[in-house]
Length: 231
Image (tube, rainbow, N blue to C red; front, side, top):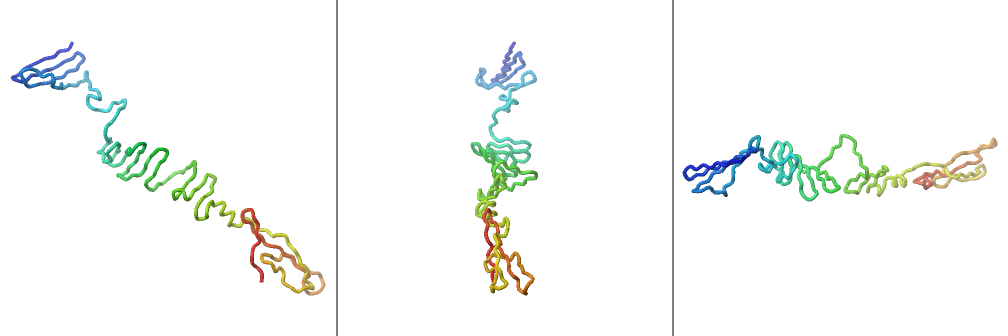
């Protein structure tokens, strides 16, 4: 059963509404008759609990919050943001698909599409694992998954630089010999050749001959005879 009580005191009308479900409301007006355009003032109690919409609260099941959110502090980031603990540290949506992270109002991270940008120095206390290349200098230097490194300092890939410029092996090339016991001359007189042996019989004082061969180095897969060494 619902009850509505009216009372008039001078030119003031009082109305009080009671519902059997516990709801009640009241309003008052000034004039010779009650003005129905006056809004009701609703009284809430344990039997008549307000909805989230009644008190402009966010429902426990979730809903839309219009404006910035603050947890334990005021919000200095503004816009569509959430601050945590202090008023300029938290998250802020700064555009379609753009989520920024702030610390003491310093922009430190940005999540945008399939890219994460770090605006400050990044310190990793554990392992840093990359499933693709590691790049520096906006891609001018790169470390590939196979361990090779690309950079301007060695004009391309490090593996190519090492193959073309560092000695991978040395050897003696095909040798030759010359009899010297009755010949005048200087042997070997070819750049890069070295004496590998001499021989002499048991007659006379002079050596009978020498053997020599080119000293060679390997760069990549190519063998080269070293230069110099002649007098």
